Length: 173
Image (cartoon, rainbow, N blue to C red; front, side, top):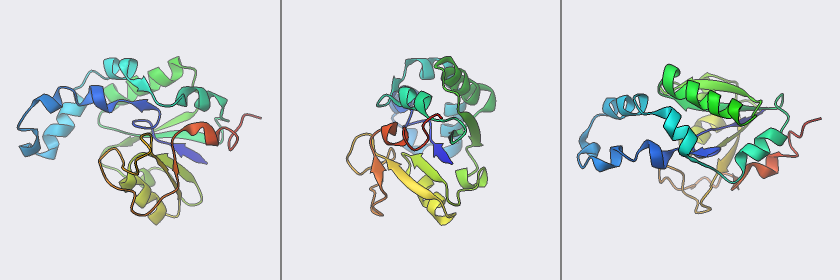
């Protein structure tokens, strides 16, 4: 199975998500719980409908076999963030199953990583994936060897800039 992350792989949600957050000069002093509350209360309808699609990801998802690929996304709220992500995907004609991962779980706690591929822009998620027997692919949209949290790809995970290489991997029959 090919698992594909949402934020930072399919849609570039971070600029809009953290636009207001970055205006707070004391944000680095706040506890993690405040950041989580902030994310939970964001206008996710606005965020998903106004964020940039990354490197034609929607096109490539629609070309993939939905029985061989799946979207695996962490969320901070089921009634807000997850609903809007799923509505957006379905509105774009994406047919893959969407597995929601509550923010306090690892992706490997929701699905069996063994022998399966994860395309993700977060190196920490890929580390967990490898530890659970999975195959990691680092989505490096900027082609700079740094993830979305400014961590360097020191383990030299195989990387991709686009989902196009997985088009043939899971092509619709």
